[in-house]
Length: 263
Image (cartoon, rainbow, N blue to C red):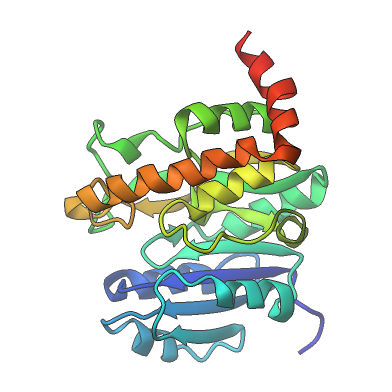
């Protein structure tokens, strides 16, 4: 197969047959081609698995999880045992990458070894891939953020919550080894939990270019959409994330370096 690919893409798929082909095509036609693509279908009940199996690209390795929604075990196995990439990209099956996303992020991380992960700015789209126009919606501006030091990000996370777009990240594999993987039991804020742990050890950067089309579903049908059950789950999981700041080895960092930002 030649040299090992530089980037490992991990695509989480769940009941997004309507969008899945557009999502996969946006990966396979990236201008940066030195990647492998691992797809986990997470117990979908629609035609998602059939769509995934229809692709014969040798860069694709697919896996079907029949039982446990939001199970991160195969992701851990991919990153720790199966992947070849020095960078890990995360994607979701209802979002779309611009075709030069990986090229720009890989170039940035190659030239900035001090940065642990690169995120990007976002174009928000609706159910039918049109520009999202509801300026009062939570997602409309949430990802439009300035760059901050890691301590400034930790301060922001503590008081405001998450503002980084999960399917935009390109992260060094070493970050998972140093910071751990997505925490089991956090169905909704697993990425937020990861960013907090990441920023305790690494600087991050948000590329100003809009390189991901993030889909806001109709009727609040995003996994973290504004529904009663998600609001309840959000409160519980947010408490688990905030508790990271109270852990013994990180509490000193918080007291010495985050609190002074408020003074």
